[in-house]
Length: 310
Ligand SMILES: [Zn+2]
Image 1 (cartoon, helix red, strand yellow):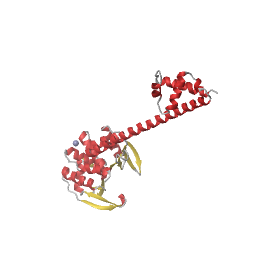
Image 2 (cartoon, protein in one colour):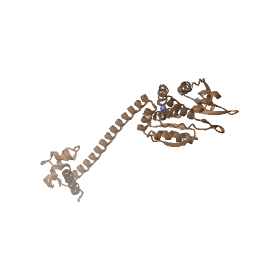
Image 3 (cartoon, rainbow, N blue to C red):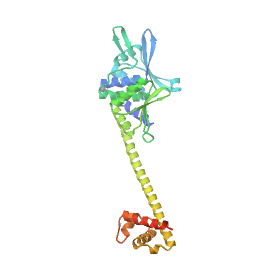
Image 4 (cartoon, rainbow, N blue to C red):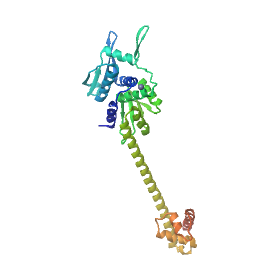
């Protein structure tokens, strides 16, 4: 099972608690995987279509518990989903009306009933915002395994939906971006820490722990890799510097100049020939009297200068 499916499985198994949150989750699910069809004579029917049986089960439970709507999920193959098997929950016109009233999709006005395409329930409570995000993720979201890449997205079928999801994320201090893909508006998250936070907000504690664990391992691996690279680079630099020093010393030796060098330079040159691998600090410590790194560096510069002279 993919990490995305595991996460959804965990989310749908969460207990439904507050009635305000049940409605918020239902709101998001209706917007993300619900559709409305006009049956004539002012009658409207809402149906939910999803490839994920667990999501269908969640819709079924929320409708039943919150609104006492009984529904019958059924399976079919549809061209809209590339001929794949999907689960459909179709509501009767009467139940559809009940749902639309509950979600404030329609309201009575003096001229009769007014339909509103997008439910605009006030989602001021934190608990309801989180339930909304959970519903949206179940209906139109997916998340990549943290071992592979950091990516979580909501594929919204229109710009307003994308704006609603973005707003809900922003209110919870999660930053996202929007891009268009094959006519859909995709709201996505790319930062590992924020994806983990969102999983926690939606109530997917197990998925969040898995994510946090992967983040920790990754940062450990990266720091080890950085440290190793750093060691390699330092060592390579050190060896190439030592090689230049040895070349210069050997050149001076060939010219018979090594023996005529001042004592302090000759002592260092001889030490370097014996210990090509040592750092400047270590060489300095072996001199009599011992000197520091910059002193050793200074003496080597002098040796290189003399070797460069004809
Ligand atoms: Zn609530």
